[in-house]
Length: 264
Image 1 (cartoon, rainbow, N blue to C red):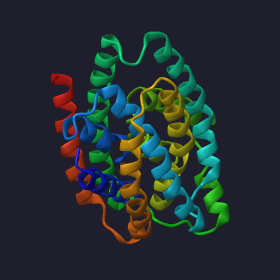
Image 2 (cartoon, rainbow, N blue to C red):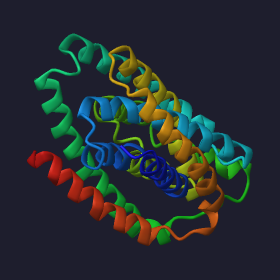
Image 3 (cartoon, rainbow, N blue to C red):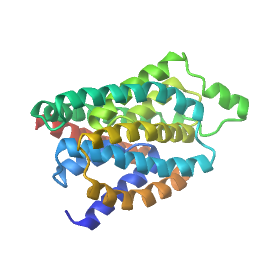
């Protein structure tokens, strides 16, 4: 695998994650499988740690801009982290490289990509209706209050399971869930929450996969060499970049990748 191609792929995905909150697993895992010939279980495990460190860099940038709604991050993490641990336990019992798990990962990944594509189209269609600012701290408090306290925990658990199994779901699906649960939250804070809560989730899931031998460490280092500058730039441009065209194009690409994985 040419090193420069891997670094450029990491940069491109990092930039898209920073701009839209989407693109970690939903883009990188298919890229690793189709373009670089990585086995599905290694692609998922490597991508989880790639997402963890990439989004960690993005979270630092967003936190400095005071955009991260930490209350929302905590609610989602309360469901996603236990679900990730439970899914890792199941994978350990079955063996990540077994034919059954490989088939399950490939098919679930395909379905997850199709769901992500649909979520991104929904988000693109709703884009102009979303507010980008809140008037004051009281309004922000109201905006970070879910319709019911249990909903973020339950949706977090669902996403935690999906992310641990496929590395996909924390991006576009997470953004769509946040839009439904916190409709008053401004778009930059939705993206910031999505990036921030994915950090502990992908870190726990990624380290779990590493303990199963499902991480390609040299490949991870090359991807991060590109993605960390990419996500830093993306988070800086997020407030000034129209995202409807980008999301629409990505949704078509992800739908194609999802159908191709299901057909394998």
